[in-house]
Length: 343
Image 1: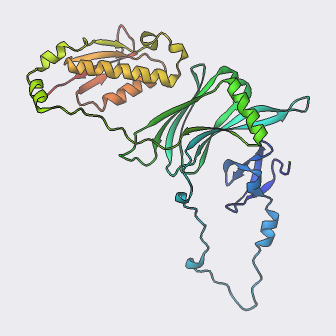
Image 2 (image 1 turned 135 degrees about the horizontal axis):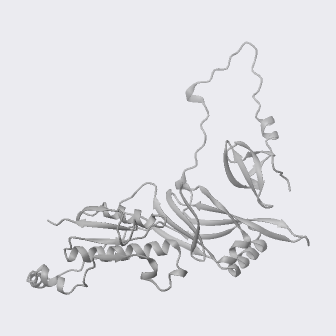
Image 3 (image 1 turned 90 degrees about the horizontal axis):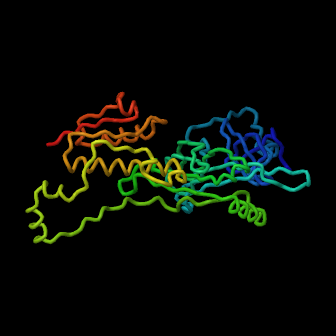
């Protein structure tokens, strides 16, 4: 290996000097520059000594003084992101190899990175699960044409069928684009083993999974066109008649996942939360349609994430007069009571 841990190096593209802090594999290094750590290919760095020698300032003539004016200070060349092609957002798994007792390369662990090859920056929430049980959560931002280090996963942990879920939103909101976008990658040990063999044959540094190519646009709600005659007939019906055809509302709604699904053990935490919130919205809408004075939603205590999500939703509802999460003789602190007001 040309480089060792602790070697001083220079980044060829930016001419910044740093040092090697880890050997990832025979093609990639972990480099630290001004306190920032990131992976780099070995052909993207070099030893700094030749660069220092060839960039020494020439000796000035005697009796002359060199003046530097603001307008002649060399500016760092900026590469326009618009000159680069958009290739989507990827989950990159960089294997770190070690040698076993027989002299064969084996994968010790994977370093996970989020790679943004688009022109837009994204906020994200990342969840990593084993058998539907959340093991790791991270929130962050990945800027345009940048990488973001997530975490390491031992190779042996892939026997537990890990899944990697993401919720993306734009760093700079756009009314034409979706408020958020969800996607995930689920891996089985056999799939990963095949991908490792492929990158060995092709001499590639990492296993890549594209999460999405382009951030989706906002979906317009389709509104059916109603004829004047149909509109006129609809006016005949009163609200009381309409409510006769709706499902009965509930004064107490229990969102414990075992009440909602018989196969919840196979769901990820993200999927469980989504199912619970959809159920809450359903019974909330029915309570409003039936003009209930209020109702109780049972969310449990747990980590408090479901309660927080429901409270955030309630803050946006015009019909909500107030809501309170206090001790209840039947539900303890695991329920929120909601009170409505109608015009």
